[in-house]
Length: 471
Ligand SMILES: Cc1cc2nc3c(=O)[nH]c(=O)nc-3n(C[C@H](O)[C@H](O)[C@H](O)COP(=O)(O)OP(=O)(O)OC[C@H]3O[C@@H](n4cnc5c(N)ncnc54)[C@H](O)[C@@H]3O)c2cc1C
Image 1: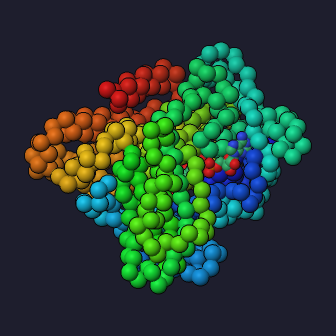
Image 2: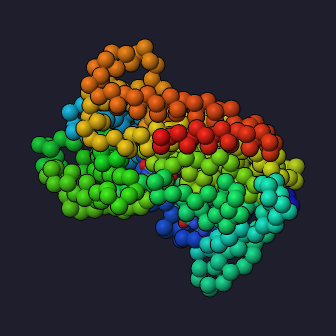
Image 3: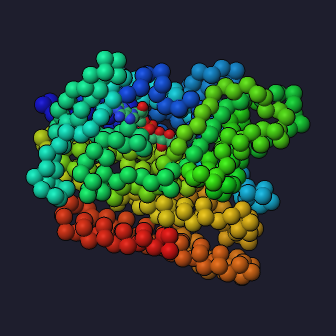
């Protein structure tokens, strides 16, 4: 086929897209700035099961709290994609540990380096070309006017990391899947929303480690899988992988006055003699937790995954969204390629799929309004909300699994009366949840087709709603 797609960044979203396009016989090339051995993170991520299944992974069977299947790691080995210990139900603690809720998770713990390598291998086997140590530097585009439809992206400048040389690569469609730095879309004219810089307030700093555990000491040191939600504006987490290995993590708001998440982990370890000093793997990095872009496409260009800020704002989990975006994009691009098109009207279908058909985007937009409110509450307020039942299992379960749910008022009346000692808290919660509900409904009515006037109207209303988040 005489239609060439270039994907910059071999993250989960880009790889799944490349695999699907290659299967359709569409020529596709991935440029990845790192090497094969560095793909993914060197720790384990909790990834949504549904997108993994949609991307073609065989999901193991659940037997009690263990996963059983060919892709599951053996207890004594590190080979395999999924960690053996399952957490079908997760304990959510208040910051002071005094209140606990149990929630269902639709997630599976995944060796993120193996997932990254597996996805890129699948793309390569399907026929995608992959070049490592090649960094996308900036988009090549022409502008006939100021509007989005006047733009035409026709390629990307790629730097060869080994030779230090840059060259222009021309393509019918460039896809940015390069994570939250998203330098390509930021090379577009600044007046376009697509070029938006994510502010520090839309990031968290996360530290994760897998440590060995002393089996003898473990007998007197029980460690429930848990999430201490809201702790220091983020979370603290522990999850037993096998009797001899444990996954621990912490994340906080990305700001100068926050504790180092590594110190949070160290403090947790100091309380648990069974956790050993030996680190199997681990690391730290910022993590995007903000509002998704309002539009992911321009003529000849599409952006997905963290580069478009589509992680779950209340947890930072973004692998599932990146996989789903890769799959949705593959359907839109395959059709565009068959019709020989790369115009805005055609690529707009991707926005529609993300915000309307899949409704994932509407949930993420609403949760991105709830996150700053949750992060602004101190431990005392959060403990109180857990205790009186205003932070309830149902909504917490939804938010951790990436869905927004406004609590039905009648159901909440008893908690509201119990909470009357802190009316300002109830007012804040009520205001933000109602606003998030309006945002959810607004994004569910995302313009189904590209039309400059109706998109501009929709966007003005979206901006008005978000401007009230920080009131
Ligand atoms: C500490 C931490 C913990 C996390 N835990 C979880 C979790 O438990 N569950 C979960 O679902 N998510 C988690 N996430 C988020 C998750 O990792 C991301 O949401 C997900 O990886 C996004 O996928 P992506 O396809 O957008 O791109 P990425 O995975 O970010 O991949 C981007 C790729 O592009 C490459 N690249 C970057 N710039 C360029 C360039 N200019 N040219 C060429 N290549 C480039 C990078 O090397 C990388 O390989 C965590 C993130 C962090 C930082």
